Amino acid sequence: MADILPFKPRKASERHRGNTLCRHGHHKWLVDKESVFDVKLGKLVSRYRCARCGQIRIRAD
Ligand SMILES: [Zn+2]
Image: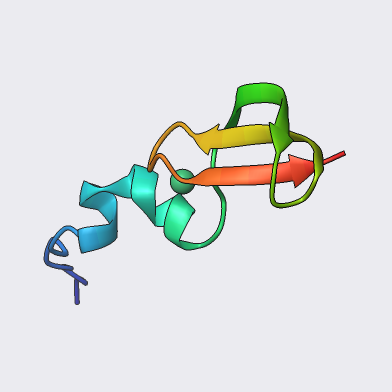
């Protein structure tokens, strides 16, 4: 008796695999701007941008 497995249909996650990581919170952060003054925080922050989805993150040092 042979086990013949049919090919599984491609998962939706494989089609846009880059954004799958993003949706799980694993962004590819690149430094967008270093040491910019954030008026709201009142101090210097570094701005990061995700290379895949373009999300912006601000980090205060
Ligand atoms: Zn992302």
